[in-house]
Image (cartoon, rainbow, N blue to C red):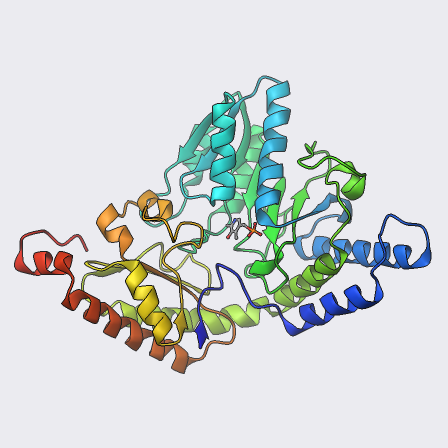
Length: 394
Ligand SMILES: *Cc1c(COP(=O)(O)O)cnc(C)c1O
């Protein structure tokens, strides 16, 4: 089996699994209690906070543990919106290809009276910093731009956008869920004020993540209750999950360069192989993308059939994001980079993992090529294209 859907979730690392089990077994106390096993759990929790903070160049007290990326995105955006509302600033700048955790939160705020500007990301899937600058107004309370896109893997100029926001005095949040553990991140170099991350995207457990919020950022509680996370996120902490996340993040950060050096040529080998399929196109910039991301459109076929036939051949991939597959709507990300509906339906996302080999890459290329040819052989859309009844787009 070749698991090529690491953008949907990753397998936990051995070290993270060991940590998860060990903390569950030995340090099961409630960190809010005063006896020794509770205090040991508290120590595990604070040690994890230090580790996570160190990886991104933050202070431990700027890290808030959450249930994952979605919660961190919600809390960051709602906090900035609430702060803005108090001072009559009700405008937010974001992009059209954000994750739904961001887009749907912005949509909710729009219904509450906020004005939301969603920037175009152009055909290469990269936001242009000067367009962010132009979109900022006197009443802008937040700029939120994702670090790396979850479907097409394109990496955004976060440092440049951070620079602009700092100069304009506007808080800047980035959804770094896809980037964390895969590319180097320093919140001070990048001038990021808030950042979201999720453990299961970097070989940690599911259901745990964190929000980085720069000192002085006023956060709004999404969950009321106890005083955990300095009163900003109630509920007994997921100590085993948090500890395992910290282990996974340290590991990922430590191996980052080596893996990127190994994955990038394999990614490009797959892209090169798939580029030989006629009437197909790579989605997103070829160079400025995550080391493990490949996203292709093939004209004349349905992405869903492609996935099922690849699964029969032992290749697990995706047609866009797990959140949109299952619905018949084409991916909002592909539409945002100007792919028309018909073409966006025939998309394939391969997000390869660190254990992939060159043989796996070649097997992926030959399998995709064969399956695309097979599906086209009985596709009415393809027949119309071939007969000239309709026009090729790619
Ligand atoms: C997976 C993902 C999320 C959601 O994270 P969860 O931990 O699954 O809630 C948010 N943003 C991006 C870019 C993602 O890839």
